[in-house]
Image (tube, rainbow, N blue to C red; front, side):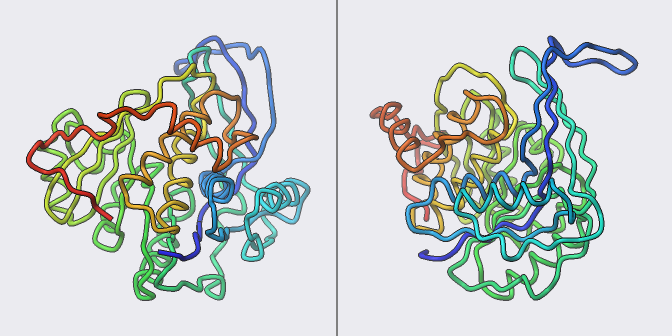
Length: 319
């Protein structure tokens, strides 16, 4: 595509608590360690895009508070190579996420939006046909809808990571080009059994959108709205430390690869490598994430069966 990656979404401070297990309702557990870092789905995706891009420029659109946390957010993204000139400073405090991570790397997250709820300035929404626009659902839904419509009218390629999932997201399916979901989100929004290639194929054809379903350490499923074909990409087998940010690393790396003209198959392979690298460290952002790191991981994992087809009658590349 040769365009820019423009991520529109949330910027948060992450406060992460390490616990032996995730508490149930009414239970108190003791954390063995507390850490503070930068986060927010949008900001994490912009970070991954910038760190893994070869040539694509990456810009972040969002809002932070006029506080130290906002300064830190913008500074970290800037160091990663993200253009933060479209990040507004507002009166509300910078968004905050409280995260509990258990010994197996699983997590629960509670987010206080803060500045992320501030209206987006239309002047920051300048899109071109060559751009890849990345959206999530951590900012108010009506803002996401407005951005999606604006990007569509400009002819940009739109990636929607429909997380956190809620039913209203279905209204965006007809606007976006690529829908990225994890298994629970796919069940909630598409009403499919993700183990069934036929159901996923039918959903893609019905919604007329390309769909990617991430399945943790199992595999990545892709279903194409144009012809209903379904493909499976194996994931990397790594020692999991912390799953926070793995999906964001996937989406950001995917967007950067698409902006640079990679096919969707190749972009997914690169995104798998970035996601796998991210789960091997604590926090949502791998400090050494780079194009060279994911290429080394992708090369190490490559096999003659890199792209087994769930539908053996379809074996063509999709761009």
